[in-house]
Image 1 (cartoon, rainbow, N blue to C red):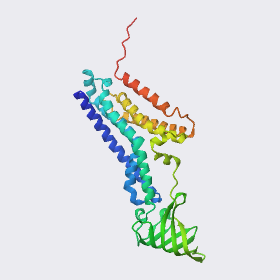
Image 2 (image 1 turned 90 degrees about the horizontal axis):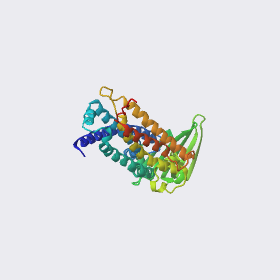
Image 3 (image 1 turned 90 degrees about the vertical axis):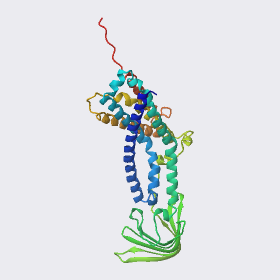
Image 4 (image 1 turned 30 degrees about the horizontal axis):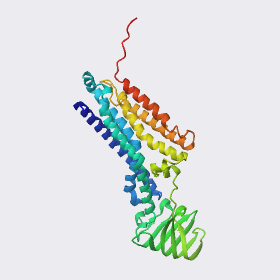
Length: 359
C-alpha cells in the first residue's frame, strides 16, 4: 500500500471501530433489559445474568456490525470531502475509484467477522446459553435460592422457603410453600424433596412426608391432607418458538435440511455478511459531499438504507419460511440488485460527464 492508502485505512478503521463500540453498548443495553424481564418471569435464573448477556451479545453482531461498517465509512469519507482532503487526493490521481484497497481492507475483515459470528459463533453461543439455563434449572443454588431465606416464586406464584440444600442444589429439606389462586390459599410443607426437570413437563418438586392445607380464608373453608409423596409444579418456562430453536442449530446441520424454515435460516446466515460487503462498497459513492455541506446530513439516508435493507431481509426470511418464495431464490432477489447498484455507483463515482461536441 501507498503511504496515503495506509493513512486512509487507519482513518476508516478508527471510524468503524468507534461506531461499532457505540452500537454494541446500545445493543447491550437492550439485551440487558430483555434479559432482566426474562429473569423476572423465571425463564432465566438470576445467577446467569452476566454469562447470558455475554453469549447473547454474539447473536446481535450480524445485525449491528453491518450498520457500524456503513456508518463508520460514511463518516470517514464525509470528513475527507468536508476537509477538502479528497480534492487533494484527486489532484494527485487518487480519486474515489482508486481508493478500493483501503476500502476493502476494512470491509473484508468486518464481513469475515460477521460471517464467523453468523455461521458458527452465534449458533454455538445459543446452544451454550440454552444448556446453561437447563443445567441451572436443575439447581436451586444457581437459581438464587438460599437455605433459611424466603423467596418469591417467578410471576408472583407464591412464597418458597427451604431449611437445607445439598451441595448439588437439587435436594432440600424442611420446605414450605405458600401460594394463592383465585382467592384460595394453598400451603404445603414437606420434610424433604428434590427438584426434577423432565422433558415437556418442565420443572417440578418431588415432595416427601408432608402436609397440604388449602381453602378460602374468607369462607373459613379449609381442608388438610397428609401425603407420603407429592409433586408440585414449578411455574413453567416459556415455550421456545421454532425460530429460537433454529438459532442454536449448527450451520452444517441446516445445509442438508429440506424444511422451509431451516432453509430460510440458512439463507439468513449467509445474507448478513454479504449485505455488509454491499454496504461497504456503497459507502464510498454515498459519502460524497461538498466542503461546506453538513457532515451528518447523510446519516439519515444511511439509516434509512440500512433499515429498509434489513426489513426486506427479515421479510424475505419469513416468506421463505412459509413457502411464499422458492428455496432456490433465497434472498438473492435483494442482494444481487443491491450489489449491482453499489458496483455501478462506485464505478461511476467521480467520473466527469463527457463533453458534448456541437454538430
